[in-house]
Length: 495
Image (cartoon, rainbow, N blue to C red):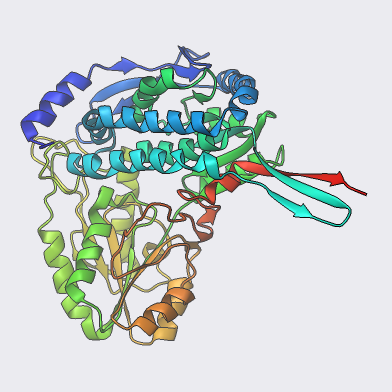
């Protein structure tokens, strides 16, 4: 499908009807207990797009009870049925591919070309990948002289799933697909800032699922997240978001001693060696800076460049960013849109002010951006910091914006010490033509994912997750099913 500005603007006018979404509980759309709503806004224009319910503990209890009631039948459903439903869900996404991309763009501020080519396709891929996995939830048998032991793997129960605002449709798919494949029932809490596409998606698939299998409660974190994670009928929590929020979720999960999977922040290193393809490495830095406006947990925000190629790299990096078109997210030519919210805009601007105070230099960008016709939008220029020391806050803390720090290195051992001297360990990149060096450095990096000679090289079935304070557990792979199931040992006496 060819994207044009006329088509996207026409679609935006048709979609922007300020719909009011209820909670989705037990197969029905219901008004929240409080009667209060939250406005979903377009961060490029600040216009209201839709309204969601501002949920509370009563809404959460209603949803968990529905999920609990649906669990016995759903947990016993056949692998074939679950596969058919997951494939049907993927098809519903395909049927309205353009609409979902538009909703992600309007509510999040990301470029329409990116939402269309990436976000919706990634969501489809999650459901298609996990559609095949119900057949692979297998136990084992162990034989002894006097007994046979049968180990069953069974769905864990009602799961709470909390997703962020940066790629909401993709995140919903990453959580829902494995849970449904495993036979669990779900209460999903999307972000209150950006969730329009998720709510419309749930509306589109409601008839495919038995009532109560998937429930959605919207609202603020303290009002919904806490009661959800501490509910006595919830058996597991899956969370993607910030480390600070994760600490609260983990504390709440301890109330009933339930397992968690956590996919948290990152401050990933992208290492450029002196024998690297400098132009390609620089382009990767451009992509990790501007993709989804830098609101990506796996972005390579610390670029460690060997001193011998630093000048050439910076020249290519700056040229690449200078060619990036920033503007109206609805324009298919736009490559860098608006920050997802005022809170995120203010956070990134704070780091732009902080970096020079710490001694870093602004090599490119460094300011808020003004876009003609969207002067009220939350736009930030793509930015390169140089003269960065690894102990600076801009090199240690997750900025979550179109900002990249460049750090010079000469000694491999010292470089690796700095690469690992950060509390996060989610992803990383490495650019070299030396195979031995590639293996040596990638094995030494304390991170869950490493890409060699191409950043964001994401393949189906790749275990996604981090080390250290980037969280624990793995998503998007067969291993994920282990997090949604538990084992039962049955020993048959033969003596």
